[in-house]
Image (cartoon, rainbow, N blue to C red; front, side, top):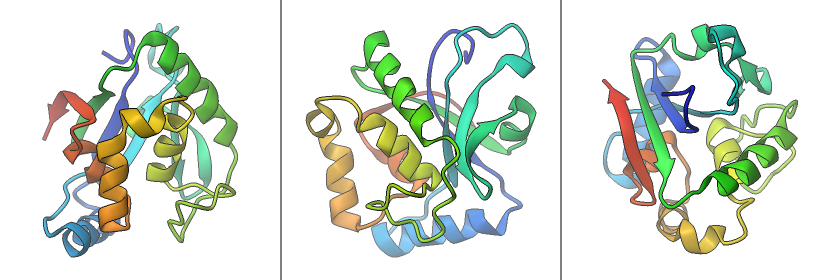
Length: 168
């Protein structure tokens, strides 16, 4: 699937303390436990083997490309598609997300600070490059405004995104 199309990718590692902390934060803010604890994107369309994948994410070392084997060493995964996004839109999104490579990790999860990025901030920033972002992702932005937080599970629970594939 990753060879033929672009996705927002949600992952969960059940043996990481951070997974439980993020899922607990979901419960505190939204009233229900989250499931996923990380989000990233695939950015390459010329893939012949696992080493060709370009998976971009914001992790402890900052915003970087990560190898396939590291990203998918998880217990659960979901592939999401933003509804109504064309290949031209993906080009804008993917060109934009690369601008954040090398930024440090945002340990404060400050969605207004563009000098550092957490995983959720990175994906949102990439999507915000679309000229009609506010209209297309109005439900998503309403969730952020309502809960005053942005978590990986919010992508999953938002009707602005379609779940294309999932393994739990």
